[in-house]
Image 1 (tube, rainbow, N blue to C red):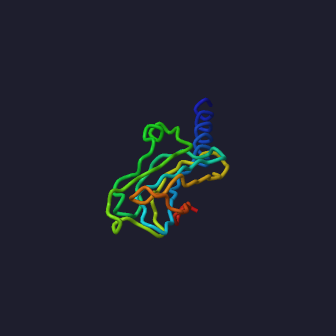
Image 2 (image 1 turned 120 degrees about the vertical axis):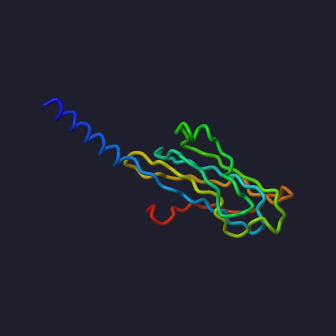
Image 3 (image 1 turned 30 degrees about the vertical axis):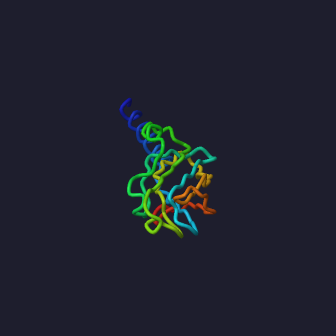
Length: 145
């Protein structure tokens, strides 16, 4: 009898945990009329269901490595808000402009609620440090819906 109860409890807790935890990737796009040498954005979830589990670079060869972020908070699973930034010392003709995927964030979502993302562009700048009037957006890649 005790084994049956433990089996039922395990099955219930496993199905509950699987239903309440899901993983998604979110692409972050920057749209800029000028070549972008540096950028920084902040993302948080006002519903509190998001945890950052990974960050990878975007499409531009001007930013070949993963952008800068708080790696320790991500590794500990405590990041429910993240600030991400990168810069490039490439020549202007090598810097991207237009619509650019600058990062992909890998998220763990917990609980029955959907996230309410709050994404803001802190800065986008040219090589000379001049600010660019750019915009930022977030998209769930196909297969995440």
